[in-house]
Length: 551
Image (cartoon, rainbow, N blue to C red):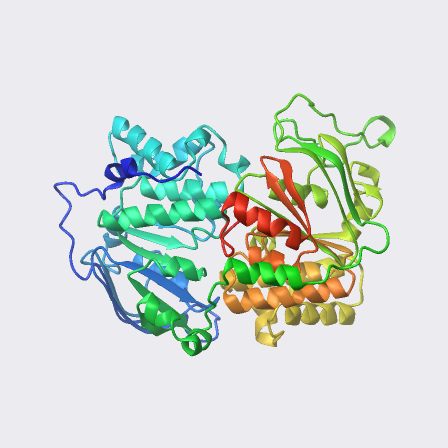
């Protein structure tokens, strides 16, 4: 991620043509706003009154399901209030033609950046918004280059978005919003998948935008993001529980706890945690072994079963000349331990996680899970019994009509009796801090908040009770309470003997949970050892924020 410099500033000034009305104050206005969703218990937003003047930077905090994303959708006219009125840029979002007029001057970066990808080339994707605004082609090219440069993704301009890591995809989505030259920028967890340097750069971009007069509304779970804001809102059960400055929100420890917030720990505190912990024993045989593993996306093997002559399974061919996304990686993971994978965006962490659960096959070297080579295509069913995977966006694993059926899918495929299935569903939900009420079990998983969806997807994996669990950024998108509960859950799984491999962006999680840390840099293991050994060197060498991302 390249450093943001002053040369970027003139290129991202908000666009106002001669036909565009001058800004109005308040630029965003909500009066007596209520929002209700079908079959939901209670309102998503209840009695919201809010004014945002031109050029203000507002950070919105709050627990999962508190209404933060719904509030953003109201501002961009992606949702309409059940009662009350929303006015943006002087227009009521309920008026005919207003939504399109608002969206031409108000850009959004959503919680899931891949939802915004519409082409197979990064540069074309960033150009999509300006093209729809009928911007002249030479100006579009300038905007695309400037926007990609601003988020450190210019070298990926001709890449396929589907080949990018989660953090890189998020950066492209932000570039697409910047290319619109919006008057209002709405950010829904834009840094959830980014590494420390990338998050710092995005904060620099946001600061540049606010100084150029762009109004910014930013939903985040990271307290340090809110410290840069002019104003902080905290939502609680669909209502505004706090409206003031960051200093007012965070200087009172009692208020921080009452609002469900979490003050970030200083590096010295995190290092102390890592030093005081006792390492877990590495008894028994390793459940996951990487032996000089290399991987390439251009030369990737197809892990699907393929039948050769006479019904034989054929080992996929490999292109050993392909460029490497992972190179000569070796490590072992034992029962009752957690191996943390950290590193910058695109360093190979998610690739390693997918190799560890046989979603990808090595270009060279070998991966063994509970003694089985993942390249042995005849034994893939055995591998699936042993290893569970929680992806970077676990809500993408949801598919059933009800929460119960989604979590029950795995146990039912194991031919368990229905009473055992129900017991596992309820136990798994309780373990992710969701009460297994009849109302929740009957709800559609797609009607839940983003954080609740992540919890249900994790419950679906936990219900299988597998020996190895691979988690790709399990804390992303969770509020402070949710993060604390997942930490407790991972400790309990370790005590039960589960082998855990976790991609994480939080150094605090590494200090509290990890037994072994692998720092990846461009596909190679840069550092490896215990948290007490690795974290001091990582902080010094990388300048990593202890609460920053390491994706």
